[in-house]
Image 1 (tube, rainbow, N blue to C red):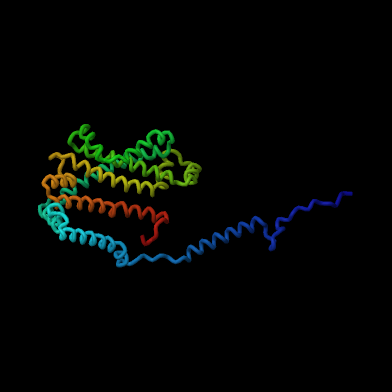
Image 2 (tube, rainbow, N blue to C red; image 1 turned 135 degrees about the vertical axis):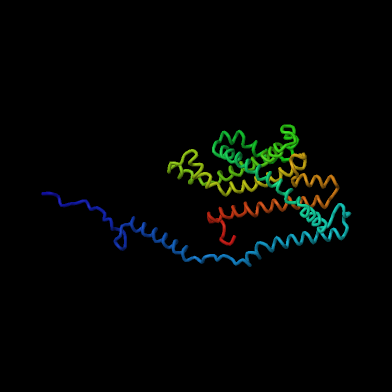
Length: 314
């Protein structure tokens, strides 16, 4: 007679109050949590875009107040005669110098000579500094070999390169561009290295899993992930380019080179015209601020906003 004893298998529905499988219950619970989170995101209050008046109040008024305070202190120092007027001219004297250059038709020419040099040198620095930074970031041997040298070059004052560049290239545009590149390339390279170092390792592993190798990984994974740090490096690279350009123009003088803002300031210094010196400094400052506000700041905000790192009102 066959045995009637049978091995009792556990029911897949055992152990759950409603008879549902344990695994399915856990999956349903996770799905419910996910749906609840998505519902919360959809019902969250949206940030309304501010009106033009509020935007101007938040963005334009504080700088205007700061400029007004600086001009007020400057005028008070001039009126108090802390220094002779030929050493410390007043704001109106500087404005008269700017107005005179404008009426002579030379103001925009001075600005264009410097801006064209600065933009061209910066573009070349980007072309050279980007692959250099990627090499340092990707290969440990390259980082160990030249990483400290690049960092040291970034900390070296740009004006230190001017005498050597004059010996190498003479009084030419080559000297000016050499000084710009030696000042900007290390900054751009270090910026992209910092951006790559901040990429979560999961992104790189996911790219390799999807078949991204070599240049494909750099183009579609590494550069997009490192973009915020890269843009910060570009901003710093432009600052170094502009500073290096002014240092070169202060020393490299030649009629064939044209007159940029740095050489303009040196010409006013030779003439002991302090109003002209301060006017040149003001122009250099305004151009640097304008480039940042018109190009780099909007680009940085767009990238950060696209990644959810910046509010809609910023």
